[in-house]
Image (tube, rainbow, N blue to C red):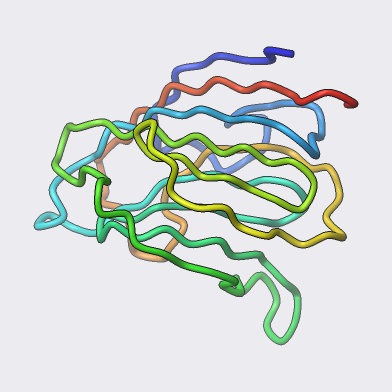
Length: 161
């Protein structure tokens, strides 16, 4: 079931209703085309998704992806990285676009970058349905004042929700 299509411009307040307000989802497909905000010579940047209860999957201007989860132990609101990988076909030039597609079903998340399969990731089995959000600045310091990241987002809920 197709749910939402939006054009967003970051920075925006990091509030669920300010990003992609959707009902809690467990299984879904999100397709987001991001415009790179600036050259990595200007500064570091990243973008990606918040989903389920506290999972975050994002890509960086260093052609890396990471899946992490915010946990309350040992330090509150500190992300714990589960897995990372390299994205050799990820375009990092200023103003260029990259399309990220994340397909989450059960304990599997499949990541596609620019219509090319990148990886399948096992995600926590105990995850609860949660709000889906797109965002930037997953890594502290990976933003530049006055710079914007544009993204077009489409979301589909998978059956049984």
